[in-house]
Structure formats: structure tokens, C-alpha cells
Amino acid sequence: MLRITLQPHWRIGLDDGQGLDANTLLDLLAAVQGSGSISQAGRDLGLSYRHAWGLLQQAELLFGQPLLVRGRGRGSALTELGQKLIWADARIGARLQPLLESLASELEGELGRVQRRRRAVPRLHASHGFAVAALREQLAARQVPVELRYRNSLEAVAALAQGDCELAGFHVPLGEFEAAAAQRYLAWLRRDQHLLVHLAVRTQGLFVTPGNPLGLRGLGDLTRRGLRFVNRPEGSGTRMLTDLLLQREGIAPRAVAGYDNTELTHAAVAAYVASGMADVGIGVQTAAHRFGLHFIPLLKERYFFALPADALQREELRPVLTVLRSPAFRSRVAALQGYEAARTGQVLTVGEAFAG
Image (cartoon, rainbow, N blue to C red; front, side, top):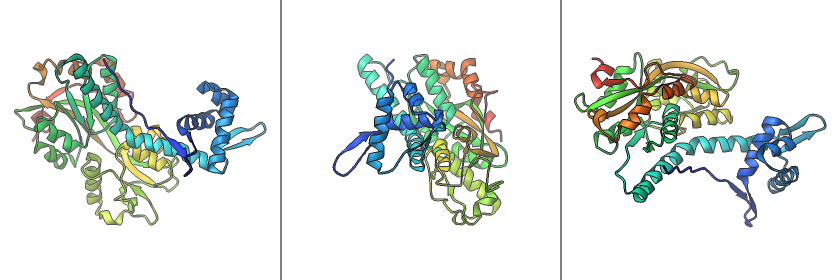
């Protein structure tokens, strides 16, 4: 099966056109940050010491200031500029990853159809999440083709109802907000036309800098003077959840500094906070863990895939459902920080999922 990977590519230069390929530089800086040694970082990347040192000198000449602080017997450490470059790269990756994965998946499908003259593969539209990314990896490992497009939960469910995809990923909070959130999706889901596959239960909460130096305890602190918040885009399930939580606390959106400042994914929000551009954001625990942030849990939610009611009989969907319901995939989901996989792969009717 054809597999395409798209990645961001940096090029840093001056107005006169001179510049350097920054991707190797960024890898080198990250390796130095991890090892504290230029020579070790070079070995880790398969670069000679001369090459690594020359690349650093070229970059420092371009920026007009050092990227590393070097001391006798103390190894090497990144300067503030070097650290900013690392965090900028992390933010770019977190922000663009869903778009690039979607484009790569679409290209795989288009080229595969031309190459093999095969029928269209199943189309999966889903709210971005770490378990969804894990599913794509598992499907690729088993040579099961699927066209993945990341979009917000409501758009995904609407696409299923309109026949634009065969699987739609969306998430619904457990507890007091479940009924209100479910109603948005039930406008598109029909009890006699759709089934649900339980993907996972995951924990949503606040991301704050390591150690929680500001002593934040919950959403009630978002109105604190000088606090900078980063939100999710309008239409996303997490944005809806944020609005419901603020409403419960009696907090008007205009009272939250940064309410209109948004990032597309959980990982992008985490990268934004980790880089120091905001003090607090909201998202799933996995993202906080991966960026080394302190996490304040707020609630749990269920993530589902909605499918046509006859999905279990559709030949093109059977391989996808087999992977979704496999012990290997369940173990993969359970390994994600903040995810619970006890019911992963369980098939439910719409009525069973949202009783009443």
C-alpha cells in the first residue's frame, strides 16, 4: 500500500537570498539539548563534529548571536534564541500535523485509485485526537487503506449524514454536559441509520507550566488579572466544552484574556503553553504529558466513530472495524496518557450510547 508522509520544511535566510536549510539545524539543537554535547549530538544524527560545528557557526553568523552556551567541563546548553527555535518548530509541527496527515491521506487515496483502478477506500472524517492518529498507524501497518480528513466533531458527523464519509469521529463529555453536547450531534445522527463504535474515554483539563507556579486550580482562575489563555477554534468539541464550563462558572468569554486566541489541536495548545506564549490552555491529558506540562483534570469524555447502520456488512469497512476491535489496538489506546480503552471497539446503537 502506498504511504505518503508530508513534513514541514524550514529555510531561514536574509533579504539577499543567503540562507540555510534549518531542518538539520533544528534536529542538531534538539539533540544538543538532550545530550549537552555537540559531538554526541552529531553522532546521534550521523554528522561529523566538523559538520555539526560548521552548521552551528553558519547559523550563529546568520542570526548575529549565539545559539549555544559552551563551558569547560559543563557541556553545551541552548541560549534563549536556541530554545525559541526548538519551541517554534514544536509549535509548527503541532499546528500543521493534522492538515499534513489529511493531505497525505487524500493523496494516498487518489494515487492508489489511479495506480490500482480500485474502488474508493473508506473515508474517515474525525476530530483530531491521539487515538485517531494511533488508528491510522495501525491501519497502515496492516495495509488497510483509509482516507483520513481531520475536521471538527460537528463537521465530521454532518459529513457522514450527507454521505461524504463512511466514518465520523466525535467526542461527548460525560456527566452534566452530556445531554447538551449530544443534542448537537443527534441533529445529524439517526437511530435507524447509524451505529457507533466506542473509541475511548479520555480526560480533558487545563494545561499549565510545569509545577503550576501560578497556583491555578480551575476555570474560575481564568479571569485572574494578567493571565493569558489559549483556546480552541469555534466549532470544535473542546471549544463547546470550554463554553459550557465557563457558563457554569458564570464567566463571560470577554472576561478571559486570550479567549479569541486559538490553536487547532490539543498538541498545538500544549506547544503554545510550553513555549511561554500563554499561561494556560485546555485539552486532553496526552498533549500535556507529551509537552511536559502540569495537567489539571476537569472532566472525562467519550470519543465515538459514527458509521452507517449497515457498516458491519460492508466489505470495504470490515478491515477497518477488525482493527478497531482488535486487542492490539485496544492496548495501543490504553497506553496513551489520559485514555481509557476498556470499551474500545464496542459497537452501540445511537439509543444505547445516549439513553434518553
